Length: 490
Image 1 (tube, one colour):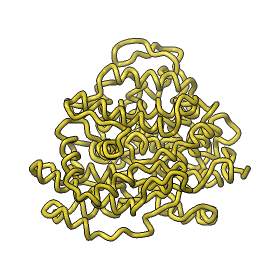
Image 2 (cartoon, one colour; image 1 turned 90 degrees about the horizontal axis):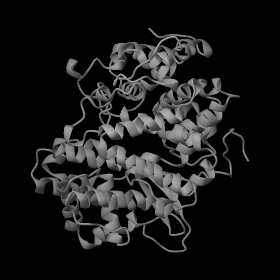
Image 3 (cartoon, helix red, strand yellow; image 1 turned 90 degrees about the vertical axis):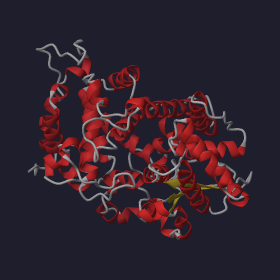
């Protein structure tokens, strides 16, 4: 249905839709006149026409995303007319989780620029719904960051390219280039390597333009610093050491990367509900804005990597204290460890935080000590820091699995997950002055257990799950050694 040729020809209609309409007055959903890129015809399209335009423009990339393995939180469910029609059904007549997530992220851009608050927040849970003033703040960030039609196009390209590394064929295609990197790279690294070696037509088409440099800079940044992991305290402070080196003097490239992340999060539930930006609720928005400020402070030498990281934890501590939970301090190792756990658990209420607190306290002294030590390694001259990739998703799935369980049942399940996490950390602890490295360990292999009825009946079965060595990835690529934005070795 969308077999259009590669190259600039396939982007013609989208490019035309990004041209400003200077003949007619464009109004947002409040009846106010739109300025700048808001006058582009794209943002006046209805959602169906926008989906078809995105599908035609990015047909090869979306076809690749059909093959993408679902993440922990994107397992397909039986779709219904109530939640659809889903973009992939419109484009390919079947359900494809990653296609839906990507397209809904693009629609979120349209809703934002058009000022369509109702569409953006439509089906969000009322108690945590994105506030109107927060939507306006987010919209202002986009409007100030998207100065030209090339900026908008570059953002859409970045959005669709973002998850191509999840295509199982991509690492195989890039295998000759992956040999210079540690084994088992994550999808962000795979995409960056593929782009660096000219394997992504969308990136190649922008070569020689200012957009190309910004796109490559964003891909490099994403391969080194996962903003979502920072916002959820999933990563370690060591992952922030190269922030200034990569992004200093690249403010607009950083802004485009952050906007790409916002769209990625906004579309993250698109395989379940394509009607709005369901995940971008108020607490999530605030968390990502704190992460953004932390990164900017590091770039501007206002704080260290550890201090920037702790801004995220302090924000969570303030949020929970405001909602009645005990105030926690980043200066106490046990409390800092608990802060990382509740942040990974995306907790926002006193009850949720209490479940995590009780689960943490219920652990044996040996396990609690091991977990606390693993969570307190910075990875900066203090030993090996382990990143439990997808751990926030496992916490989320655990709470879904036990949603109808008693408080004690939830605590028991969370305690089982914490024992599992202690095993992931494998005895690591802060050792001042020790040689450091970062090891990323994907915990996605545990999802089949956590989503099972057996786990709901007896969460302790997770204790018997063997951790495969293949799940570990040593993040050893250093900017300035064999990487640069133009794909040539320094």
